Length: 393
Ligand code: B12
Ligand code: SF4
Ligand code: SF4
Image 1 (tube, helix red, strand yellow):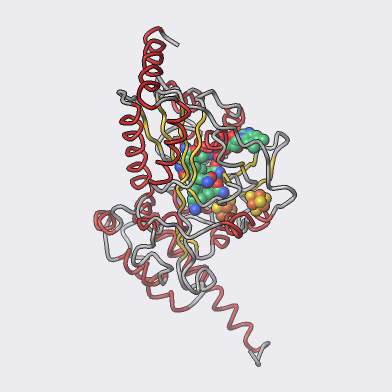
Image 2 (cartoon, protein in one colour):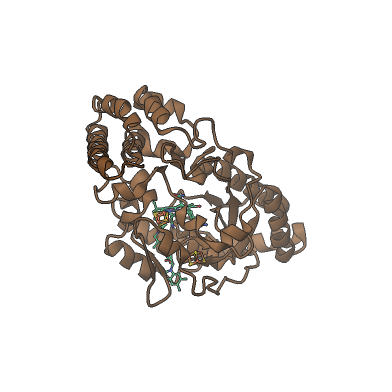
């Protein structure tokens, strides 16, 4: 550490001791304050380099990240490897968990005429919700410690190995589905981080793997994106096959062989979390009102959703989805996904809206609408050919 940083750390240490008695007392009070802000999980870890950077580099080296170029940029790799490149005076990382679980609306996901939107995306944007609370937490620390604090808040907003830090702060283990799972809350929580230039007592890392012999998530994944654990125990995902990637991150065409496997999931996917016994046992409906499903995003009819999207341009879409995480896919991406789901539904009722989508200004949308109409055409002709053989049906 450079002389000035060391000097500042000493100064902060003395200032904190004077203001709150001890760093231990401040660490404990911080967790109470985090809970008051709605973070059901909170842990503290030093900003040491990750032991898993080599694995991360190999993962992007194999192209498992697909088109998510931000995961593989050299500058962002360097920042993942070294937190001081994000905050040079960092001494502590506070990691929080903010829960977002909600029940599926009645009839969803079973009814193929209705759209399934992943739980995390049904309400307000978690980036805004969690960030605001993290800033409030940092301000509280500053006031308590009576210091001029240097802090940075992150929630899925920077090149940081968030789950790795969460495990090191004791929040849980890496499940075979790659999610960070807490042994008393499950995995339906966002990870938020505060980097602070203040030393606080660290929690013990979570060292166990509580998956045991279970493979429910791997078996449930419809696209085969979960590849199990490798020889070191790391859970491996081929993100290019994950429905969450295909429906949110991928900008171009969804590979044709994967389209039928997406079913009616138009934005994100929770299947490997739904399959997990830890969620079955512990997931509670979130207390955060901002995560309640917005009108029209609670298992909407696919036809109505397509009509709603066809009626707006990109600017209109941004207005309609302001403050929702779903704006990330853009109008074109979401409409592409809805066309795929309409094809997978396989009902002639979808023909008029898909025909309208053939006239969309986006070539991507037109291509997916044509694919869906092709699927409907072939399933209809199969049905017609099958009818004489099944007179009682
Ligand atoms: C890119 C990304 C995605 C990609 C890739 C997902 C993936 N599994 O890698 C896609 C688009 C598919 C995705 C999907 C989802 N995501 Co996402 N995503 C991210 C992001 C931005 C980066 C993740 C990343 O770096 N992946 C690359 C892998 C290699 O890194 P890793 O997951 O950290 O894996 C570590 C382990 O492999 C470990 N490791 C290495 N060796 C070893 C050895 C052993 C023994 C062990 C135990 C571990 C270990 O080290 C790696 C590096 O840290 C993070 C935010 C962030 N900055 O971290 C959110 C994040 C992971 N996503 C999140 C969420 C909520 C989701 C979805 C649930 C959304 C949805 N419903 O659709 C799905 C879940 C799909 C799933 N099963 O993961 C949350 C997860 C919270 C949690 N409790 O785990 C995060 C943390 C965002 C946040 N701040 O809350 N996501
Ligand atoms: S989110 Fe869905 S597609 Fe992605 S790994 Fe989990 S089950 Fe598979
Ligand atoms: S479903 Fe089973 S294997 Fe998968 S993460 Fe949960 S406990 Fe682990």
